[in-house]
Length: 336
Image (spheres, rainbow, N blue to C red):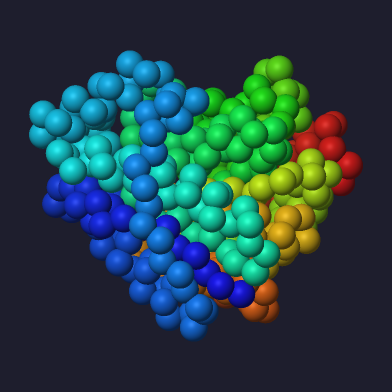
């Protein structure tokens, strides 16, 4: 199995300032992890996304605002989200890399894809930057694939709910959005009841879990909820919003996953979609060692290498209660 990695040097030049957790070293750590897997790697240069493709999910006036903001030297877009002069190209190529992988993998059967996207994307709204994100990298490619009539499942395992992705795609019956995230946590969205809202009821599947949740509950969520729903949806493509901040070493959240838990989850995805139709897109994750190890475990699992899940932690008892609440909502729409 060959690993196709899309990246661009501009991802290293996107300057968020000193002491910002979303820093260039993240890209270096992930790439080091991918190269350390021993998989055959083909690196492709992420192209710039066209503005017309960004406009599939973003307001044209917002796209123009980001362009001018960066051209003038950048600054703070909100208390968390920073852009510099170089961030315009970084944002275009972050989105372009995901789109390029969809094209690259379309004619392959023995490859897996990883988009080293920086800045990340899943918090970016239609007309607002937030949560370190400028453009919604996953949503752009999902909208492109939908324009070709293909069904897209987005699985978001970042510890934060992908509010931008849900907001952009939630009314499309041909797009499934599934998120496992920390409850009562930034950005304070992603409720169980969202599955009953909108024009495409059932296609927004949120599984909010309490602080302290570990791999034991994640494995139950994966096998009992996520995989059955995705299998029934029958996607042509699976896009993984691959945040690794649910790792126990990550200081921005309070979940307790281990690196191998990500590999275990990735390995099970082959039961619902071919690996060559699955693209992992970097979102969050701020501990460099955890990033390196988790990214490596993910692509190994996706490529068919057996990865045993972690076993160092147990979830708090109320995590099972939260999982049961999610199951009750999901079962109104899907066979579990």
